Image 1 (cartoon, rainbow, N blue to C red):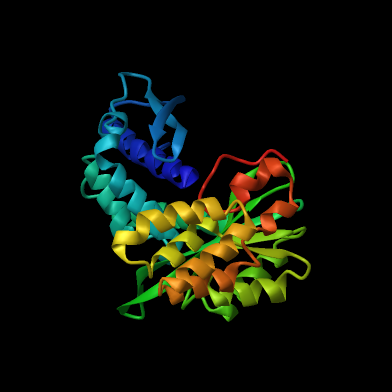
Image 2 (image 1 turned 135 degrees about the vertical axis):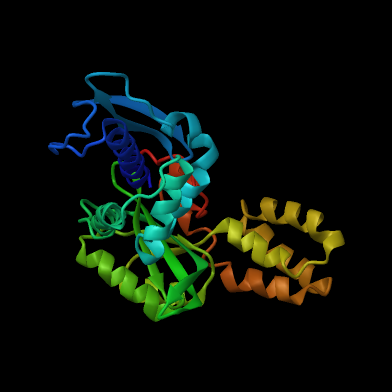
Length: 313
């Protein structure tokens, strides 16, 4: 996200420089008002962290840009354009909107196409880059989006795989659009990751989707599957009456630290008539504590798919 945002904003400034100079780089024209004089790095804070942009310099007069002044107001447009590029490629309409937000109108179709292709190339390079070194921990998640497919909009799943390397470095390994998140879709995702070099997987953390469990069991022999503790709590509380949710949530948090207490809680809920919640506990009770087979300093981070700071391995 940071790289694509950087590229897009750099292109905005290049277009601003072209408008002020009235000429493209190295173009010979009588309309030229000035000459380029390289670039100067300047940092910008975004929702993805701090990025470093290449601000153009003009020899004859100061270069003026709206990027740093307007960015906080148009960040959502930039974020949407970049995020959607992972789902369905770079949309020229979204690129045009970003340029328009910065006051740049009437960008030529060929220029918009060039920028879109440049961004799309970076997306493909990111999604297909080699995976180097062992990745002991995987975190799986899926979100559903409406995607244009053959002239109509349909719901599709974005399968996201995040990994933590042996050195503690955390990165998104894959963001892949699929028709659903059934076992076959996750198997294809895992096979693609292994083809790129994924190895050394020891623990896979996700929600309780049966397709994920089946795919992990088939594709990562010898690895353990960990039920995300946060998703587990949501699944149990889903069938608890509203008036009892707070009490049961407290009991759940306490029981997640003690397997014996969790079994007792299942009995209590069953006796109260919350059979579905009790059954949920029984279904996942063997996969709630697999994280405890790993170093204690990693437990808080690998027991859930929630994002935490990198693990120091």
